[in-house]
Length: 279
Ligand SMILES: [Zn+2]
Image (cartoon, rainbow, N blue to C red; front, top):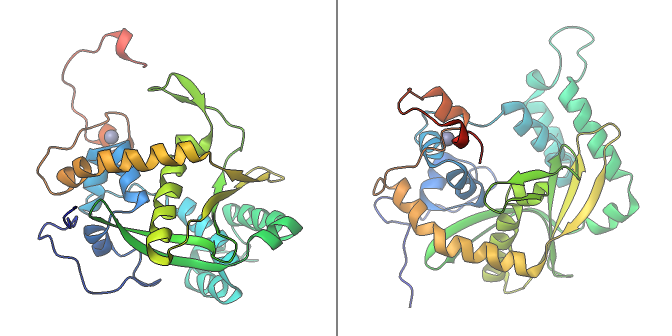
């Protein structure tokens, strides 16, 4: 039997329910792990901890807005209108003729390429922005599903990326990997599948709809081999306790020494051999 462990320091799960309006509030990260936060700790524990403490902002605000611009469009016309109204000063130039700024013109192109695609139109059907929660070996997790189709047992996550075919060098595996692996989206999909199963009792197949920031944009529906989803969930089960320990101050965070945060807080110490500069 597994015992209930909350990521909170006081080990209490809040009775306040998660909603669309509070899903991204900082307090929710003290209660639930999420793929976003988990991956941040995997990338650099020191940076993730500083970010959670409100001492550091990692996120590129424009990239986040571009993502939300696209997501709100495919959520509903009302959601998109509300998003544009809320961010109207950030989306358009401050001088006449008040044109949409370049990153959002690009978002418009990405929207158009999907919107005009018949397969996408038929495929992207279901409930939008569905919040799911559950426990993985006793630890509470949360997730938000872009498009959940329980009638046909699948869900979709929309991802914007530079180039679908870009290769990234994986220093652990010593091979090139695609953007999905580089950003560990298979972990996000594995967790979402598990949370959907716990919430609705239905085993759904995950798909990623990737759309690129190229002109014209590229697009693809991507599947993840079951085996990789299984490994990703095993990784979570094996790694989540360490991340909770770092979060709660039981273990010192490891610095990656390469991210923006580590570089900005670095002090010269040991001498580095040139053989250790790249791995
Ligand atoms: Zn770092």
